[in-house]
Image (tube, rainbow, N blue to C red; front, top):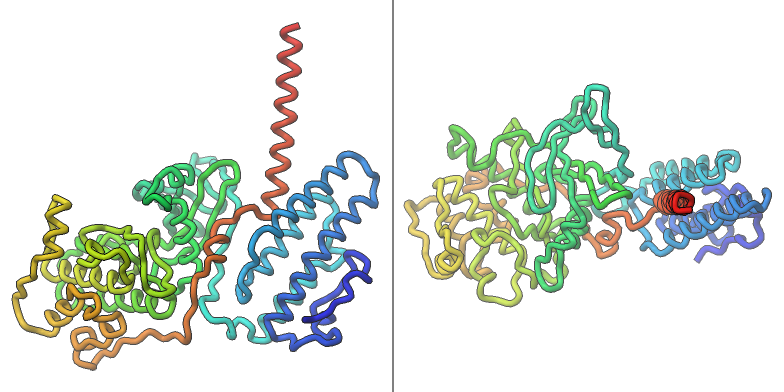
Length: 474
């Protein structure tokens, strides 16, 4: 463990990453531990510096209140689990702390080269190939506080996004079309109060699944998966805005003039995304259906909606949340099921619908649907590579069902090897409980300051109203 002369230094004294990494007994500066220790050091030292700055001025109630704000925010910050190394959340966190303190102390800290040190740290990470050593996605997701305004022409803006029109709505909230610099986005507006009240099971509400969905979408990075670009929080109410990739194509089952070649190409897109989820991200989607497979204008397919996805530790899942019409027989008969075979079954049903324009087991009555899935055998119309693939994907025994990797290698998918299909990635990554816990900011340094200031403002307003009421009564 790297030993630092923290107690012998003046709070706020400049101590750059280069000095830190070359300190006695320091490990190689390329290693994650060096960077991690340095950031922990800066976090501890920073609060002491600001506190001493404020206390060195006049000990007015105003300044003492500011010190209390910082102490409160620091406690909240420390109570949050540390981010995982390899993501530049460390850097963005340091910047947000600096921004908050500039607001609090009114003078800023640039004279003490805080931001120079942060830039030094960021350059050190980038120049030494640290990101390349980290397994998993390195994409950056913005996480910001909502600022709402109405433009002169009456359009609503959420931060930099101009809201254009509503695309749809559901139990979670609404999806709206938005634009920024002539690029369109889909903004999913989640009502956290409603989600918390919506019980999906005795131990789960819809809001807990939102945490998981955001954690997954922050990490997955594949051209056949809808991308999350930004999470916007409104600290004044329970709205959460997810800025997503906008898919402007037709619905999957409503493609006009589709032929078997179109279906083949769409299915290859689909299976590349699903195989990435299964074997790289170790995630079972758990709600594969045509409505969750979106198209753009070029008819490229991408997987969407990770609201009920499962992070696979041992491949077994207990919660059976999904769409009944796309669930395999074992879901209705077993207490614990494997998540990935469920996805393969649902993918097989989706392919069947694309080819034959019908669902083989569909019924408007839930009991009849369940009975059809459990007992009814599909009458195959021909013998071909496509039929063989469908049979293997729709095997009622999950132990015999084909895997996504085997699907990618199947003769129908590769046209007997002439068009091989393979995902290009190394290793794998996982979405941890820590990722889920931090998917939505619990209380950032900035938000702690703002929240306390708003509480103080409301308290003063209440006191003024009480004074006015008493004056009127007298």
